[in-house]
Structure formats: C-alpha cells, structure tokens
Image 1 (cartoon, helix red, strand yellow):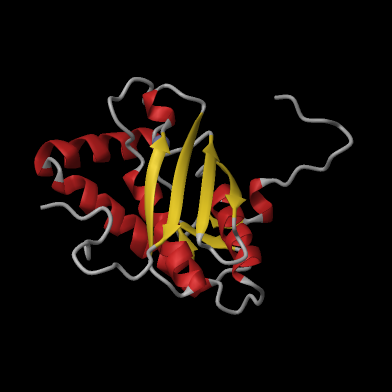
Image 2: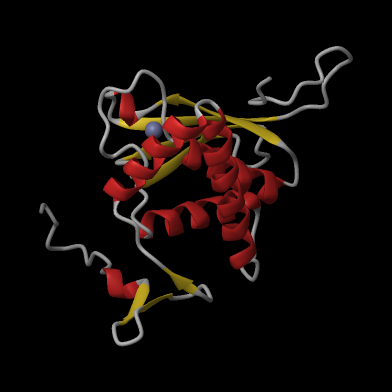
Length: 191
Ligand SMILES: [Zn+2]
C-alpha cells in the first residue's frame, strides 16, 4: 500500500462499470462486457488442461490467448495510430484488466524484434517452482497482438517466467521471415 500522495492513481471504476443487479461488468471506452476470473481458478484450469492434454495443452492455451489478442485489437479498431502506440495502449488495457504490468523493449516501430516484459503476471501468479515457463496463454496473446498490429506473422516464446521463480515473465517476439527452402517450419509447431 505504498501510494505516493501526490499522484492520483486510477481506481477500478475508472475502467469498469459494475451493474450489480444484472451481474454485468462493462468496459469503459471499449464496447462490451467483461468478466473476472480469480488467478487461482486460472491456475487450476491450466493444471487441469495440462494433465488432460499433456503437450497439446500448450497449443490449446496459446491458441486461446492468440484469439483473445486478436479480439483485443478488433475491439479497439477505432483507435488510431502506429502499431507501436497501439501496442502500448493494448498492453495497458491488459494491465487494467489485472493481468500484470507490461513494458515493451526493442523495435516497436517495425515489430521485427520485441521483448515484452510482464511483471506481476497473473498467469503464473500461484507458481514459483515450475520446470518450464507456463504463461502459454499470455505468449499467444502477445503473438496475436503483434501479428495483427504489424500485419505480419511472428513467433513468440517465453524466455523467462515468474512461475519458475523469477520476478518477471519475458516474452521474445520475432518477425517470422519467409523461410528459405528446407526450413519452412512454423515456430512453436510440434510434431
Ligand atoms: Zn510466465
């Protein structure tokens, strides 16, 4: 609870309207409803999917994240600006949704090489000792955002994850260049 007195921090009502009677939460500025999911429920969902679908769960969750990323961009289509600016806005919407604090490093003008840092990530919040990164949904989400914003396919991989004990999750994004003959494999695909 260290809030500097001089800065007027936003409150949740600045972003959402709760209609308690009808059980609806509406996003301000963006049309549509939203709902909340406790991070513990997310952790249970992720563990359960991993147990049931093994390696396929990774693809499942990253595809789900990818679709949500695309939908984020679609919902904010009335916003204008270069991809760099829109990416920041979209990540700040994710922040106001309680997903964590995001920052972007790298070539955000062209999207060829980007690193998204997620501090306080919700998607691995209840983990501290996983063997490998677990934020597949977030990786897919970031991948969907940049693919749509820059109009080109990218690969995205989580190179550091708070679930493994670190303080942040780090997602490296690379533009997927047309493959030269013989290595036309899409990144992230598995046999
Ligand atoms: Zn993570």
